[in-house]
Length: 230
Ligand SMILES: C[S@@+](CC[C@H](N)C(=O)[O-])C[C@H]1O[C@@H](n2cnc3c(N)ncnc32)[C@H](O)[C@@H]1O
Image (cartoon, rainbow, N blue to C red):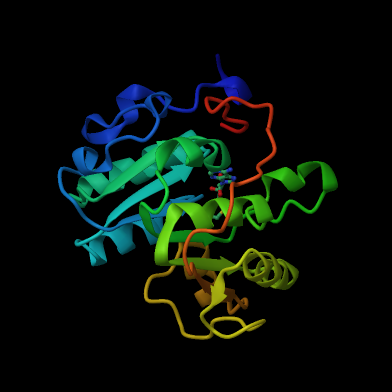
């Protein structure tokens, strides 16, 4: 298989002998060789945030999920060069992989920075500002676990406030407000905006605890091994 039908995960790419998600819930402690707070970044792109965040916070372990194979390889290569043992990069569609990778309450943080807005109706299911993903994260994040969301699209920032607040997350800046503190670590795109002056909209949400009741999630009709883009 190749291109859009390529398998999501090449076992050879899994660092530290980490289990394939077909085995549901890799043993992250065994993968990283220790017990540490576990964070997730969805869509790291060229990975400047992932690399600097992992390097600056050696007490935490960071898993990145990125659809583009070349970006995954680039980040892994740079992590090797920098000797970072607390960063694992998986290729795949985060929305399909999430339920297989992390048991409830296992994540301490989620980073979603400059996700594609996917304005067209037929692409909406790909959005990262989406009630289904937010509800899923209510379950996967531990109580007090935080979501760090950044975008350059004002309407997407407003949509994020609506969706994450409506699904029960606490807005750390106050209801309906954006987070105004400057970030400690910049993403690849954010570094560019620092030079060009383009505004960035940030939000920070905290999980009060797991949602009540079962998650009513729709079937995607896609297999976890799907990667829609190279
Ligand atoms: C606009 S780029 C932003 C990259 C980076 N976060 C930054 O701030 O520079 C969005 C990234 O998300 C990735 N992406 C999009 N949908 C994804 C999904 N469902 N799962 C994982 N990664 C995804 C894209 O391949 C791309 O690298």
